[in-house]
Each structure stands twice: as structure tokens, then as C-alpha cells.
Image: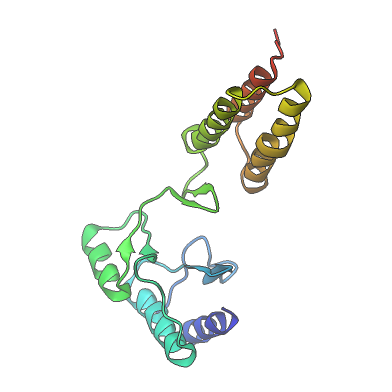
Length: 183
């Protein structure tokens, strides 16, 4: 991925028609990599997307690695259907729609809303529902809450600023599972 990053940076530097994504321009961010996943950003115009495509082709020639077309997607925001079709034809990827989930959390292009975090509350509820069928001691319930539910909440909190409403919903579910009454 380091080689791909260098290819992208060189090609962007050499191509005056390339325009950075508006939120990436200040830091000159073109791509982000995590494990075998890659996010590439640009302004939505044909010349910028062509630079990205040419860079991927160059990387493919020198490394033999090919993007998985079935897993690759283009995401757009405020782009006409005609321009989308043109850019999709350049990259040969399917169009994706936000929010998309990555590493268990939603990726959204705007401020995180209550509805975006509702999945976290639903997962906590489903875990508790499964556990209620088992005969667990108070200490066992506390251990499950600490090791599973709180760690899930902490993971989301490390990625997002969760609303008070979401945190209160999760805490209410945990208190209910423990059998603790709070006025």
C-alpha cells in the first residue's frame, strides 16, 4: 500500500488538472489504507478520477495486485446522474450509497445522527435478549456487561461522539439486564 500511496502522490503532483476532495485538500489526503482496505478521495470530475484510475493501473502493472471489482465502490455526494455515469465508467466500480458500514460503524458524510447510532442500541438489545434466556448470576451479568456491552460502547465512542440519547438508551438496557431500578 505504501507503493500505491507513492504512485498516487506522484501522479497527483504531476497532473495539474487533479483536484482534491474539498475536505482533503488542506492536508493533501488522497488515500487512506487499513489492512487490505483502501479509500481514495478526489473531487468529482473526470480528470481527477482519471488520475486515480491511471494510478491504480500503474500499481496493478508493477505489483500484480488487482482491486476486487465486486467489493469496490464509488461514493458520491451532490453529483448529477450524468456525471456519476461518466465517473463510474472511468473507474469501473459499482455505485455505493451512504451510510455504509466499515469495521462495525457507519460511515456518513454528515454529522452523526441518532438514527445512525440506532444500530448500536439494537445490537445491545439483541445481546441482552439472548442472555436473558440463560440463568446467570448477578456477577455473571455484570461480567457480560463489562466485557461485551461496555466494550462495544467504548469502541463506538472512540470513533464518534455519541449523543446523550444513545448513551442513555444503552445504559437503560444494561440496568434492565442487571435488574437495577433507577427512579
